[in-house]
Amino acid sequence: MNASPKQSDTRNGRLLILPWGLFVIALIIDFTNGTRFPITAFYIPAIVTAILYSKVNIKLVSSMTCFAILIPLVNHFLNESPLTVIVPMILSRIIILGTVTLISIRYQREKERSLLLSKRDPLTGLTNQPAFMDLVQSEIERSRRNENSFSLLYIDCDDFRIVNESKGHPVGDELLISIARTLASSIRKYDSAGRMGGDEFCLLFPETGHQQSRSIVDRIQSELTQCMIEIRLNITFSIGVVTFYDLPESAKEAVTVADRAMYQRKNAEKNGFHIQVVGDPANETLTSQRLTTDNQI
Image (cartoon, rainbow, N blue to C red; front, side, top):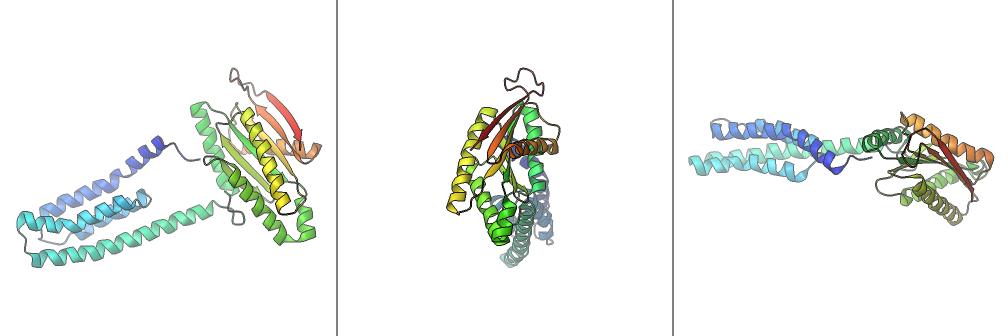
């Protein structure tokens, strides 16, 4: 889950204090120095930290670089410095600061790309299990602050092992990819979908009550069934649905409850879902009451 826009703006503003502070110091030294000695290096820390802290804000970085390059021209008009000194100074700054900027941007983008890949399941492209657990933990903390509920859907592909054994692992992989695509296209932009390992998936729905989660699981079960028809595989799904009004202490606890709800459905009869509500939906008393509903497709 992403932080709210207000929280993100505040955090980003604090992070940019350092690069702007370094840049202002470099400007003061530049104006004070005039053309007595080269100070291009003073701008490098400001530009590099701006790239790293702003996650490659091109407008910000371009503004800093352009200001640093044009300062000698300003000095020319204010102090009547000779162009024979100013032009080489500008050219050297273009080369040095331009190179530093391009290298720093490339480094930061590769770093962000590596971080993104480290949080993705390599087969399906969904969030991997460790990263998904982090998202659930963040949602627990956010829900506690805002006094909200949230829901988890834990999905297991019935008889996936039979597909692997009878049709081969490539078909099994394509099945998992098709399931992942269906799940990813079935959720809102602020929901999350993760592969928990093997043929198990989990969906996180912030600020979602038990009535909403019932509608969601109906729709997702229907879309998964349609997906299986399209790829011509006789596969069904067992789903555990849990809405937390009484918030769990940890992501592990939350996902374990959802996993158990899924197995309660699967052990009773496959191809359906089991809904569980933890806490009081009316939010009057959080007593860890559990309301359960089963449905077979």
